[in-house]
Structure formats: structure tokens, C-alpha cells
Image (cartoon, rainbow, N blue to C red; front, side, top):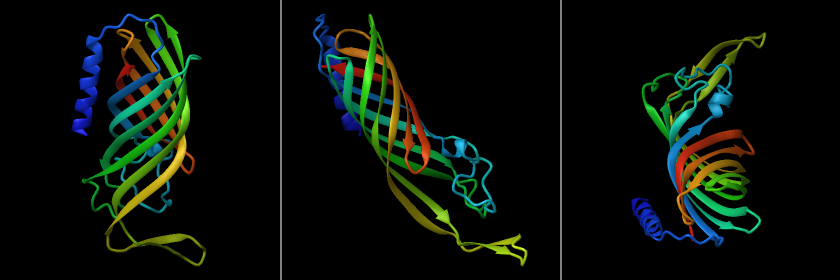
Length: 224
């Protein structure tokens, strides 16, 4: 990953030196950014996917899981102002354990995400300022390593919960592949005809879950 970033910034440095003043539409753009990444699932639905009788760590209940996102996008610019782009990112979040026995609540977990999306966006340009609105289809791989338990609720004859039996902890790995939709909003300022700096904001809606993640990061774009 470090080698890829070095190559990208070397290309950007090269284009900064080539201060082209041409108004010719440059068809391709390479955009990259590193910034904030958050999983909003617990924030939108506290206790998501957990039964009512499971004990939940108050440090994660209803919170956004924070992390970092490193991404790159290749776009094709059409004369109409629309852009077709292919995006790839590697992201992660780090947060406290949420085991029901409360044995590991002082420890931390790290979830990783690999995201690919095909997006269509529209640019609105005013002099050197530009806003871009986009949406598209995404594929997301999610990897979660955790500690789990065999949990057995105990009910009385009136079907009232009277106890919860918890077995011994065991490690497990959850790996999920899902499809969804991405929504993207960007602003950038053109330093010249090839180089632009700005900020990117996006969120992902996973079909089986709902709104899952969001990303906010500075970005640099090179057109060629």
C-alpha cells in the first residue's frame, strides 16, 4: 500500500509542474484520499442483531465505530458533465469488545472492509469551484473477528425469561460479502486544468442491513 501511495503522489507532483492553461476537456481523472471512516449500524439501531436478553457493552451501544479509509478512484468524464468511475477502498474500524459475559469489555476489536463501487456522478462547475453528486452500485467485503458464546435463554411455564445460561467463550471469524448502493457528495477547487483539491463525503446502504458506513476525507484529483 505504501508503494502504491508513493507512485500516486509522484504522478500528482509531475502534473503539478505541468501547469496547462488549456480549456480542453480532460477525459480521465485519478482521485485518491485518506480520511475518516465510520460504521453507523449501532448508532442507527442500538443493539443491532442482538436479542433483548443479551448484555451489551455501554461503550459500544448506540455509538459510531470509528476508523480510517484509504481509497482511489478512476473516472471517465463525458462532455455532458457526467462521470463514470470505478472506486476501490480499504477501511477499518476499531472499537471495544461486546461479548455478553463482559469478560473482554476492556479489549478492542478491529473490523476491516474492502469496498468496490461503480458510480455515476454529475458535476456542477462555477469558475474553479465544483460540486459533484453521485450514486452507484457497490460490492462490500466485511471481516469481523470476535469471541462468541453458546447462549441459552431459560423461560418458566408462563414463557417469562428467568435466566440466561452462557457457555465458554470461543473465537470465531465472520466474513460477509454484500451488495448495496453508494451516495457521494464532493467539493473540489481546481488549482489548474489538471490538479484539484477538495473533500469527499459518502455513505453506503447495504441491501440486507440498511445504512452501514460513511466516509469523510480530503482528496486530491489529477486529470489527464
